[in-house]
Picture 1 (cartoon, rainbow, N blue to C red):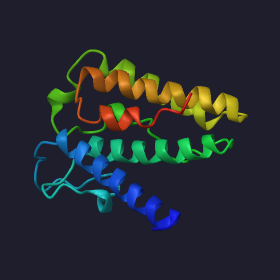
Picture 2 (spheres, one colour; picture 1 turned 120 degrees about the vertical axis):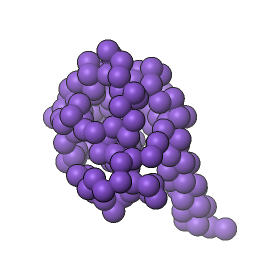
Picture 3 (cartoon, rainbow, N blue to C red; picture 1 turned 45 degrees about the vertical axis):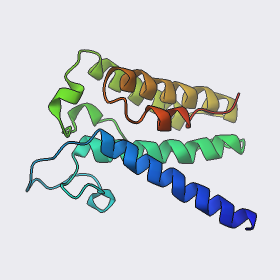
Picture 4 (cartoon, one colour; picture 1 turned 90 degrees about the horizontal axis):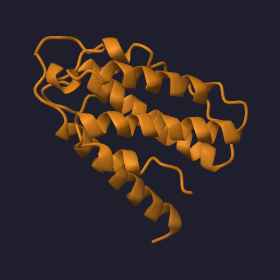
Length: 156
């Protein structure tokens, strides 16, 4: 196999792992409620909550940012997650802990710092903070995505 084929197989495998990890945190959503974020990305046959869909977008944004930072570039963040504290979760118990809102706000602040980074050094520092906030929240609730989050860290 050539390098491109190997890369495509590995990328497909990572995407599948990502999807299965997210599904591990999913419960059944209420039927009949329209998703407010990108319904086309919903892989859950029972439907996914707004927060679950948003977290999938967060992962996609992190993967893209990591690739740009590894190339020495400043990532162009175009997704706004400022309303994540208002997003409807799949299971309200998953965010029913006092740290959720402060951790979500820390994530939003870190994403804003990443979006406004002036150079690759600032971007790398802000990106690491973004991933740390993801890890901090998922260590408290919904541990399923932790292996995927760990893979988002930049190499030392």
